[in-house]
Image (tube, rainbow, N blue to C red; front, top):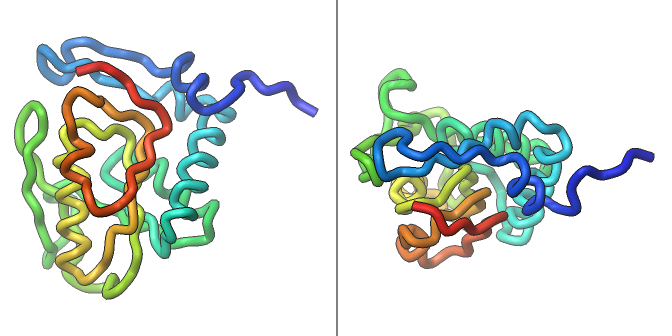
Length: 184
């Protein structure tokens, strides 16, 4: 029987998250989860917590946001025996696509889903991403899913930058955060 390195996912995040001030622009502190994801035990703890939350939210499909949300969302979907909806950044999918532009804390971006080939009508999707900051990315993903007839049953993220108030934009569905951080 192996001995656990961490008592829970929060401790694993405290120990393994790398904070990079001034990236991608001055005034932003980037929370790099790469060391967390590379640690097998820490990764398992995160996936287990996100999967438990998604199950409680009634997930019928998991939506993983490009790019770290792909890693987390795929693992959660696999654990729950569900499909993964890869919600891509603009320009990564062949046309036709549905596109939703949104604001970031340091610029603008867009997300896309295929216009055909995926049936979302009436499907309860739980969106999984790494960080909830301003909420723009999750709102754009929610809007795309609604445009295709799906329902966002909830949101699961690893970290929340609380002082950016992104959670306020996600009203109407539960938000699960593994660990809240007070960074900007």
